[in-house]
Image (cartoon, rainbow over all chains, first blue to last red; front, side, top):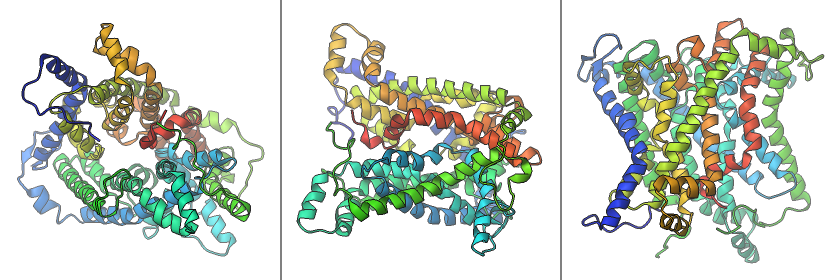
Length: 309
Length: 286
């Protein structure tokens, strides 16, 4: 994947040296940005996380106070972790399966299929504030379409985003509208599975069900892996929907981690504590990403890989 | 680069009741996906008292087109649109220039340390914005950039890992002979990129431009922390201000939301292929 290695360092011919210089020249924007906008700020925020800092007076050294005193005793911190964990645990499998089902649905080129693909992808284009606003309308407890529909079948709908017991579930309910992104990635994966494999399996008498579990799923495992990574990282960062639809409420029922980080940093101006929260988020995402990468060898099959039995 | 992948493969053709069942499922799912959008459009054309009427009005009679004019003049949306366009266009230029340059290096030039740097680049793909948001804010506020559009535009000139990766995959497929021929003709690095690489890579570049535009248009968190003065607001900030600051007029809110979403929806319709090939970047064919 990374191209063949150039000869191991040491003596470069003048021609090669010129080429190396050109390489570093071309990548310099990224390299400079990486130092100034990523590594630098990360280290700086690590320092800030050991201080109290309100942006007005200079940072005041506080040692491990933010991590060891403030955080463990901060009920809203634990609440935000809980909300994010519950939501991630529910949302990621839903998106993984929902996106796959959509992709399977639009896989075969039947008449008009492109229109359906467009319809399923369209809502993801609406990301941002508009996405949340539509659902505020639909889930309105008074005369929202969802509750009117429920009433028609004799159910008294809940107060959805306004009820602490239902708010997080409401956000989950809204989220199906974003499955199109996963669908498109799955679709690309599905289309790269050679049709001959299915034909061969059919000749051998495999049912559609067998083909699905023994061909489609294994051949799709690298795509599933890719989607899983995207989905987990994205879900940990949930912000806009919650900020616009509920602002973390009611009663902190939808206080996502990043939303709490934002409130600490920009509402309360606790830059030190917010930086500590950011580092906690970083470590959590890092651990999950590494675990998922590690798990690859058990379930991800790359076509063209040596299979030495 | 075979045809396979783009053209759908003949998996057991659907016939008879399977085909009918498929269409039933497709139609049901499509209805579910379109209903919120339809309801949004219908609601935007209703008088306020009819938005939550029981039973629901499936068609506004008569449609109040003036809702749009009223919604969009209630706040200085023209100003917000201008700010948003400045940011989006600036970001498109920034990403296209920086990412194609960096991607060329990673795709076509050899140098010690390249593999390590490429792995670092891929690792930064996993780094979420909220993690660097606080320190970046502190740095930009030291520079006195808060409440200007600069923190939203300038960083794009330092590239973006995802787009660099995307372009690099694309550039890798360009035959080296073309580059060598240009070198023999005396072209320098920038001339090679400009005259050889970019013309072949129009589709990939377009993908980067479209994604950047859409992301900048919809972005909420970064504008929220940097832009405090109302005259600097983007459309998304304006929309959320609209929702929170007045006694919500739902019809107006829907009209404003739709108007603000319209440009990206239109963009999407015209550039579907670039969109989809970008998202499923594994399938960079052609």
